[in-house]
Image 1 (cartoon, one colour):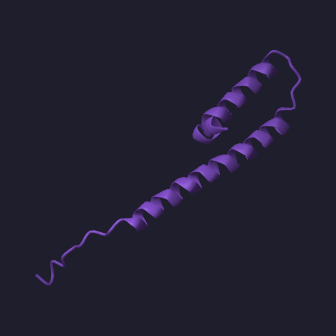
Image 2: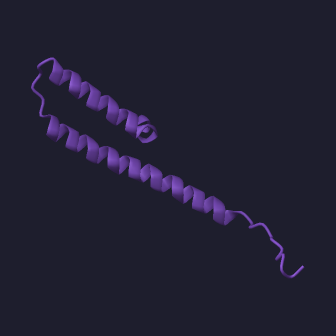
Length: 75
């Protein structure tokens, strides 16, 4: 599951490539149904990863002290 969270696009590309190979060799696979499920799962997982990353950035930004800037007009 960690691989899926770390590299969702690569896993999706691998699944699509394997399905393409199966179809090319004549194996009957319901591509549309499988790709729909894979796409939905990867979208959910990658969306969660992106949200956690952005939440981490926000928490880090809130935890740091802002730099003080001087107003060049008042100097």
